[in-house]
Length: 190
Image 1 (tube, rainbow, N blue to C red):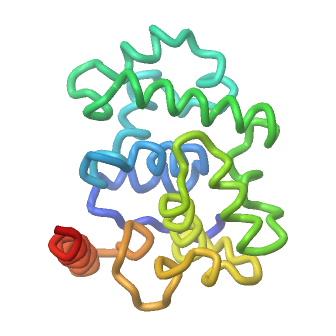
Image 2: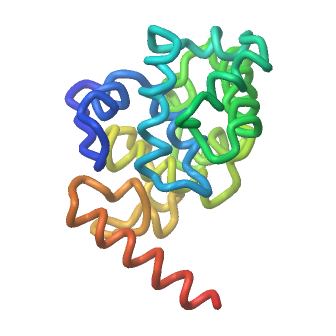
């Protein structure tokens, strides 16, 4: 994680939290569905502000569910579905506590290869194949987590020079390319 510098199109403080806190990055990825990615990856910073500190997985895993929902729902809500996503974040944190000693980085740190990395990610609540591959690509491209075969395991999201997901966003230009790709894919799907 040393030397990581996120430059997503969000506040510098939110990027800095993603840089230094693997749990914040994972929470951002959990929230990255049905809302703009800027909102998803800014929300860990807003959550930390509301709590008065960056939370640990242990803290979120044990948090009173109704109180956590209230924090997620406080305007502006951290997600358009605050109840469901507060529960999802809590479930992911419970897996981290039960399987990875409460450390998000342990999810990926000693993965033997890309297949194992994607398999571990896919075992988290709410992570299907596509989301797992996107997160593996994000870890590889921007976090330096590159076990053997990570690009192949991440599928098309791992391709060098691609502009398919948050894994490829480093500036306004790359954001535009990712948005154009997603728009094109939606048009093809119709």
